[in-house]
Image 1 (spheres, rainbow, N blue to C red):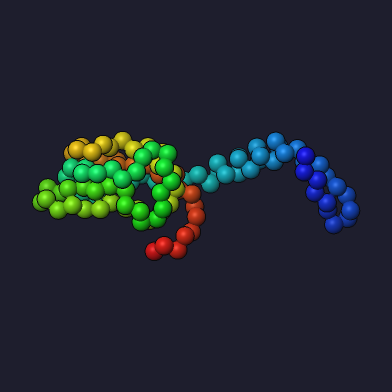
Image 2 (image 1 turned 45 degrees about the horizontal axis):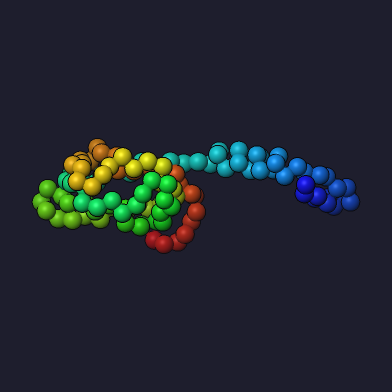
Length: 112
């Protein structure tokens, strides 16, 4: 149990489990998932992360070889956890292909 004193001297007891449940419910209200689409048509050369990994803003996530032969780095301006990673190395992608889904951790890191 956690004891919290108030300014008038009263003490209220909180069950730790109730606190954890309320905290968990509050966090779920702010869950934002971002879908990462391929900005290029081509072939996935390298997948640089895995599902459930935490990624940082502008961290390289994929390398895609375009139809013209150029290797393009794919990154995104959010940090969070990879919740799905439906593409694999060697897969042909276009601008409608979902590369990943990221649960935004809503942290401002200043890595712009």
